[in-house]
Length: 427
Ligand code: NAD
Image 1 (cartoon, rainbow, N blue to C red):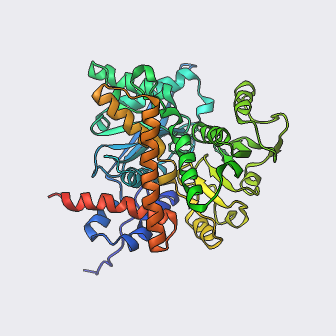
Image 2: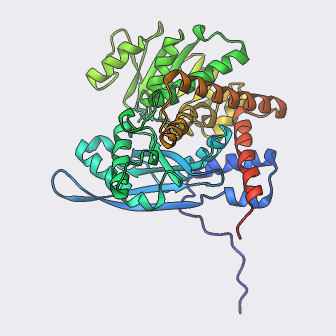
Image 3: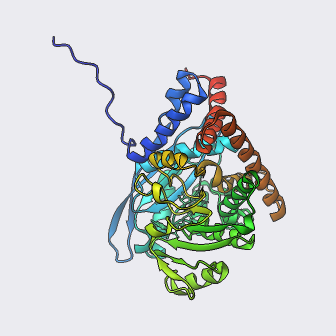
């Protein structure tokens, strides 16, 4: 019989460029983290991937199928946790990459969670509110065997919000026969949500920037900032920067941006965006295309839109002194190297946008104890958690002469690795 050459395993369904980016980061961090082979093997792939086709009755009576995913990367530290997004680019690989990043983020923040991510491939702007409600309820119902307050706890992400979470909570609770607030976080306060959860990610981004300013000897009130993305994360980050006295000179959404070198009045811009449905034409501003916005001279560039925005193609043209990643995966690995060579530090996603999952954790704890905290307590505890993680990352990065991203990943991976080693590989 002819010898069959040993071939490497065929690429798995989730092995898309974004997942490869996450895995390359893991591999690079592992060189520094030095963890046992069994740990490496376990963490390189997600534990569980759920692929669904959701039948949804459209307003015109027809039925359309929507691909939907939920990927649970690691349950070593506890139930898995991560957002649900509605976007035309949602794929298994995207969810797998985002789930892996959630694992490192939760571990870095020392939250008792592993990482997950999910979403539905759809264009949410082309769906009516009724269609979004039916899509959400069907998704929750089909996902019910794989989620739960002890198993996997979804939260909002791109194009999902408090209302989406309320529908998820209601659908899951209806099947159980009693209210289960701990099934999702980012809910309305009326159904067990937490005060300050809505603001937590954007406010957390600014807390991390403040911490970085203290280390760099910068005065936040003198900073000129550009914010890409004007949704939950970018909109709140811009507001917080403005309230703390920084000058926000440009912001954008998916349709384009507005620029005023003298500083935009962010509260008025929010009102304008709601009234006009877009940022375009904001009085006193000039229009700026998204690609151009990233290259505006400024002190801090906040990336709060989506992944893959700063790449090999434009990293050399960025004219900021610091990048803050409010979005997940907005900087490619090649861009990371270019920015490091140029001496532009990147405050990495797993640290910088961790305010969201941290207050989600507080929400889950409150739901389970049925005891609710006030805004001051949540803000203080969030600032403590982010400062503690920031300081560990900064010190590790200085000690090991690595980027802040590498340090953040190493710190997260070491937390997971210690738990995995103690638990062992079963059987
Ligand atoms: P969102 O849907 O509320 O807002 C996204 C914003 O980005 C919108 O203003 C949209 O118009 C804009 N946008 C999309 N594509 C763009 C592009 N190519 N150029 C410029 N702007 C663009 O979503 P969000 O919840 O703010 O999430 C944004 C990012 O932050 C995502 O990467 C998400 O995974 C990450 N994140 C969100 C949370 C959270 O709590 N919501 C937590 C952690 C990380």
